[in-house]
Figure 1 (tube, helix red, strand yellow):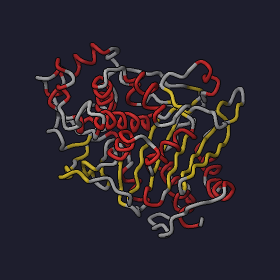
Figure 2 (figure 1 turned 180 degrees about the vertical axis):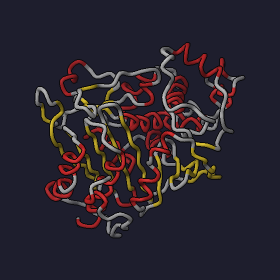
Figure 3 (figure 1 turned 135 degrees about the vertical axis):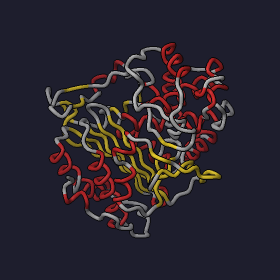
Figure 4 (figure 1 turned 120 degrees about the vertical axis):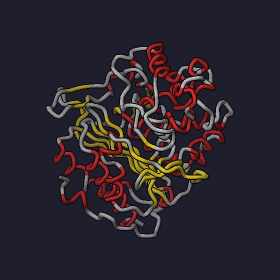
Length: 384
């Protein structure tokens, strides 16, 4: 059960004023009112919290990046983002489209000719980015260890559902969107992300392969029994969950999703296009990886839309025709988890608000959402 304090302001609508400026101390007071208690409740060794507010960003650090030896979380600490990484993959695919390398309405077989005559070859790139191709498992099967085995698996795949009728959250879906996006641009996904996408976004402490000089900044994650752990990348790991980053970089990316006007034209348009709504899945609208809710939103709706069944079960969806154009009065969010880390990002463009929570312990998703909700509502109502 969530601590009562984390349910503070459930369902409350934010004050209509948009906070344009605030002192770091005033922002920190609001974050401090939630994060230390959350860490104590869930046994989290270390956290970094990024806040975007009125066009400015703030980062606040708590606890330790490693327990033994004790090493504090700092502005340079690298956290595993887990599935929050998928938002970068979606951005890359959207960027490829704005540059003319692909169309999200194209079938996968156009870019993977060996699969063109198979059911997988007929699924659209949009379906891959919205988890609606017809039913894939959450994880790539353990037996698949290389690209050739992956292609054989996809060649033999048969859908459980008609494309666009059920959402089955899957690393296979988004992973293959990343593979195809990079292939359309003539590069390896990992290199394309690190050499082009991250630098174009101004992210200089965001990595798939951590440089040797940055390894000392890599936090240790911790399992439920306190064992230190870091992820091992499997097949499609680069595309689906493999990014490590500082909170400062992730909140910069959040701010670019709030207001992408500082980005080059094609990338600016690509970021905005990832906010397009394609499918209604219960209380949640599925964008290109981002998950969208009308704003103001009740905490109960966010908890329902991020419930375990949305990750592990097939969810009926309704296609939005035509797709819903990006707009500002929404709450966009994405969770991410690995065995030792937890991440959550939320964005409210109309209020110029955003938050990212990074932790080196995989604590419950409802606690992340309730904490972020409390902080963002407090920022919206208590600051000028």
